[in-house]
Amino acid sequence: MRNCIRCGAEMKEDFRITSGIGIVIRPAKGHVAVIPRAAVCPQCGEVSIYVKEPDKLVGKETK
Image (cartoon, one colour):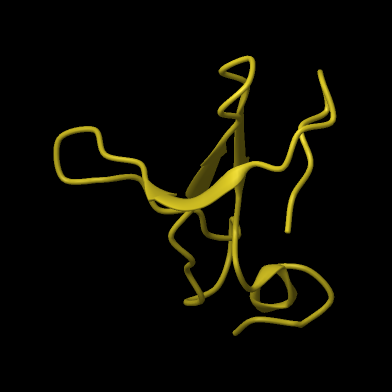
């Protein structure tokens, strides 16, 4: 569960973000990539972008 940083309401999660063929986040070096997701606040419209498995990008050495 994510709460809105603006108004504190519970956000709706797991929306896809697309732009052409999509957006992928990956480290500068390595082969690991994750697909970002968005959460939307139903109260104020704030959008938060997150990844479901941040440990794939942070804290692990990629080859």
